[in-house]
Length: 336
View 1 (spheres, helix red, strand yellow):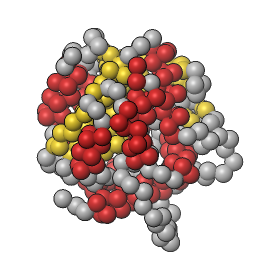
View 2: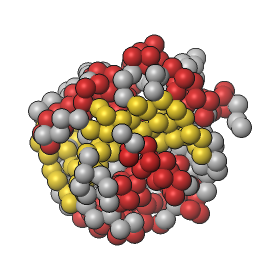
View 3: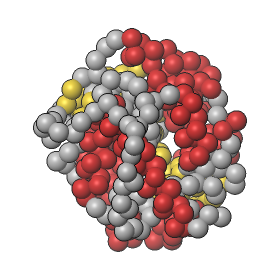
View 4: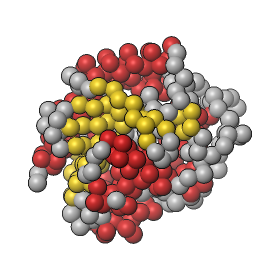
């Protein structure tokens, strides 16, 4: 198992890489906080929709796209809806929810009514300048507004990475609206705070997004077995990464997180004893953004929680070990 210091450095490197990628085509100066802008239609959007459809077909995920207006922040969210039964909302950490939804919500939708949300700035949702509103407040208001618009009183939340942080923040704030919580992979910002790392001098601008670069990022930081990741997933993620406005939204989100200082999820540890919903952590033993010991520690702080460590799996464990992650998630959601 890698040392915790190495894992923390890897997350810092990962976040630095995300920020550099975003800033390749965007300057943070001159944009008002909380500004919202619609996704601009065009060739890149059409290409993403085609890639999303191919990814859905790969996994037999028969979802319909919905564009849901929410009250706070006032914007339109893209949601993929499928199935019938008890409601389950999926929240991803990357540039599109499809890499999370298609492999998971496809099987889940045979028993549950699933709603997979593109967070603001991601996928086909409106673009958002995240600066000026705390990450926690943004998560709580956005999820609450979405549930109100969908007329869902109480749901299970399934999240990965930043989507996991959003789910946790909402469950702490509005426990009456959350039946169960499932976290797949490290919940964003789970490690203790670290001393600031000085930026290395750069002799050249960050490289623009490429499929080669995306594959390298997955292999280095996100999965244990790149060969198990279907090409349809990578194609959809790449198409989302180059959508208009994604880089801008991501850059402002990273600036807001940096401004807040304390790692997102770690800052919530004193409140975990008050978490009401039953909770399941599904954590890859090779998650380079945070070791499985963090999941075990947090599960021990929560009244009704457990942590399942998945062997030979990274930060996106459902791509490394799909059958096991689907079974663990489905069995947990079935339990009364």
